[in-house]
Image (cartoon, rainbow, N blue to C red; front, side):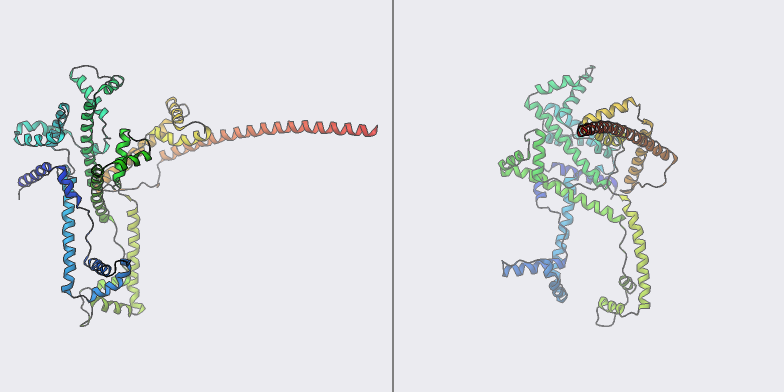
Length: 530
């Protein structure tokens, strides 16, 4: 099959997928759970449990208790009887595979087009049409249908513009990962700036835009909200694809109630958790079902991402070491036992009856394999499978170091006030070694670039360790220690001065007390003489 024919078949599939409504997709997704298929033996155990429960409904059974007795029954079963459970397992396996394909096809529609690529020319064209439709106030779903039919009728010359734009948009996934959630106000500001540019005027300030946003009608605001939601949904989908491609560890999805709370909190409809609980109780079944659908979709996407993430780790994870008996059995593979005896039971009894001298050989081999495994495991533990942390700026490094000192010195002040003070110190730069902090920030930037390269290439990166350090690092450490020592010395001096002043006052008080006591004694003695 040629590449052109493949591309044509892919484009047909994507068009068909776009024509299917969200309601139909929800119906398809409803029955999917992505539960792993159960092996024939577990199928047999579950069948046994059902039979016992049908005879006695009140009985409480645990599968763990039944497994030993079921294992003996399973051994005695004939191949013809086992076939029934093998068939059930094969059916579940086939359904599981088809369910995975459906989740990938409907939840990650553009996965094939966007795999390690920039957005397609059609995607750029569609985004432009969505923008135009938004300005006119038309529905985004209708725009998509019109755009797909329009794209098919366009000539190659007309499409050329979008293919050129495609070349400009490289590193799409990284861009999608950086973009924050789009708000309706941000879209309104963008629109006003674009309008001013088109008329060759200066862009309006935020003080001018804010009252204009307040004056907008509810319907106008709703159109901005609709478009923002459309873009955010697109962004979320990109984020999912980005995680799948790069093997990022997926985060657990929110439940239906949590999604509802987040939505209402953003709109400012609830102020506390109690308000949220009350609002949730008031919802009817149809309204609740919408949030349940959302949570179910998120859960399926999470399961799919987790499956790929585990596969990626399994490739790198070192294999467990074999035991002496396992090494012996590996050697005997293909060698037939005595007639009428089971292969496993025969060779295990042979191994148990072996003399200590012969067993030692296998024990030594097992010890060597265990040492190799431990070394590989240490190397594996140094690998990180999540996205590397972004680099810290010089100012932020200074804040993290200075903040605990200031908190102790000024406990009455809150964090924003302390940050303002630190920012002032940084701007003035009198007692701050800015060069040192900027050097450290530059070093952290290099670390991030190195880790990101590794992560893109292999799907993981090696963690940074405090090994050999350069002369520059030692100088930085010395300068830090000097600064700390000076601050400590100054604090100790102040303490000494305080203590000395206290001792002086105490001595003075002591002298005055002793004088008064002496005068009292003298007065008493004089009285006694008289």
